[in-house]
Length: 298
Ligand SMILES: Nc1ncnc2c1ncn2[C@@H]1O[C@H](COP(=O)(O)OP(=O)(O)OP(=O)(O)O)[C@@H](O)[C@H]1O
Ligand SMILES: [Mg+2]
Image (cartoon, rainbow, N blue to C red; front, side, top):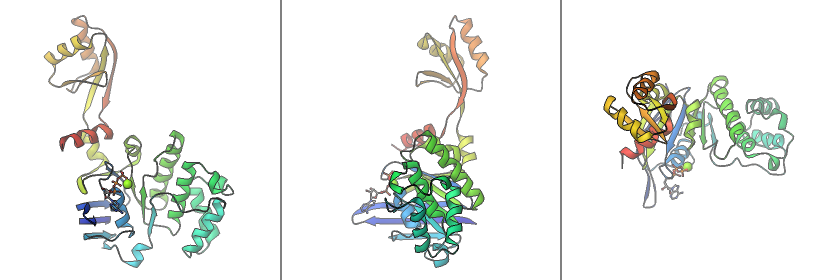
């Protein structure tokens, strides 16, 4: 069963059409990376899924039921923008307040459990205002986890985090899909990070889904190449152009996309007195794939 099925969703803000017939399919158990330029409609879609906005048209199904279904609504955790916390209260007290708001039974036990999940069990007595940005985001996720959600919707939870904060967040999110059996939708502009955890992707533009794919499909769609540097890049490029069918010059490296071993390239250039100073095989990643896709549509 799919966690989310959206068909032909529209949302207008006055004259502004934010969503323009968007379709989206998120399989259960996925970590769904939701990507698109500023203003393309990611947050609007997420707010509609969570019932924070009312659609202008179209259909949203969550776990096979209409998104307004009360049982379904109770199983959605959401972090859109910063968590609403009292700055002078401790993390623990903020969590307990949220648990009380949600009528959670065994509140202490539940709060302890979700704080452990987000690696905050040792910081429960910290005042919220003294927490780092990464910690605050994780508290937001802990709050969203109260009530044992089947679906977690996170709007840019890794924005502004340092490398360590991102690593912890990554571990936490992967943990959540496993131990809570939860589907996660996560919007982000930090594609290199997203690529490390996402199992599925959706790319939006102008309020429409322009591509959905699995991580495997992305992988299969991303060509490998031999990247190299020489002292005389122009001569090397000209020589390689004669021998191979797809050679480009990108980011100070020559790339040969033909199915060829690096040593064959080195040998070929060596015979023409061009010394290779650096060589490796590499693969196009999500970021380049996305940039190319965006260029296509212009
Ligand atoms: N409450 C609102 N009132 C009017 N226009 C809105 C409102 N919310 C969003 N919009 C507009 O709808 C469009 C989609 O916005 P949305 O916030 O969903 O984009 P986004 O993909 O989340 O962008 P970003 O990457 O910058 O977060 C934008 O043109 C935005 O200006
Ligand atoms: Mg947004």
